[in-house]
Length: 411
Image 1: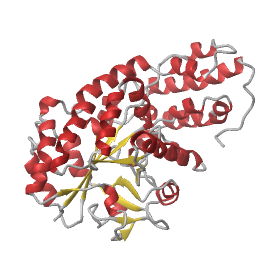
Image 2 (image 1 turned 180 degrees about the vertical axis):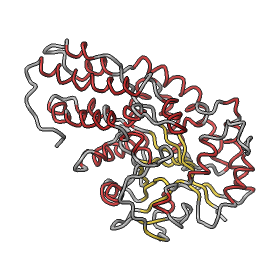
Image 3 (image 1 turned 120 degrees about the vertical axis):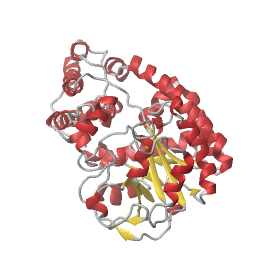
Image 4 (image 1 turned 30 degrees about the horizontal axis):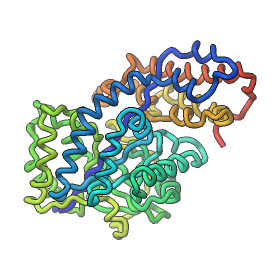
């Protein structure tokens, strides 16, 4: 029976792109091609601010305030807040940053988890240098903004592969890496409730328990579910009765609380009762870093990409069709050009995973989830938004007379 619970929450909002900006970019002339001007054209910040305000009011503020109140009851959580979201909160809702900073400093309620700064697909860029810089930038931001240096890391959406976790993430300072535990070919007969090691690395792997995570993330408001309503005492009984293991890692989007499941669903009451019911069930909330020095029960060889996304739990949510792969390759191809012209920050934003997630053409349950989050009316519209920006920025730089021929990729 399990007696330890790790609750991991991902805080992220993309900086969504504006559609149909090709002509505006191509109309720019010398003296107009700079980061503020480009950003004002390509990012749909009116919509981004509107969405951020809604999510902050419905989810971030009430959930963080509740966590502060629950700290004395033994509640603990691990949170990764993407740099993309940090940037937007600092512009429009700094009080969320202040509240999270208070939680980090107040008795260890929250442990911060590092990830690629822009919640990007940087790990797919050859060479690994960009991936490492994205991780290091996020670590530095957590240190400067919240006063905590993360020991626990994740790749975007729990993407993982041997070379990413065992080499680059360790090089960035990771002691523990979080990834998905619902991939049959990885675990085989093993259970996600144990600590694992990575080949040729000192990092420890903690695996998300997908069923217990999805019970909250996807099924909580589903009145046709045979276990509805899900109460805190029932859930803790499930945790406690999980087949032999040392812990359960429950991984969710932070927006599960108040945004994906509205207050009226009872989600905040559920969260409020969790630490009380955990005590009754003799289950302790812990931070993932507390397992960093434990010996792994086994080692996992993961040569191919896994993630927590979709039924497939691989990289197909972002790289599963030609539109996604073409758009990503085109963005990579202008990396050196944008860096040469002081547009690297903007370029990194273009690698945010959400832009490619919107291009998915999956059907069934996975397709329904993609559609729920998609601000465009089709995968092709999402594709064209990125392509117009790639062509438009290249055009704008050509107009300045400084668009020299450069090699594909990034240095």
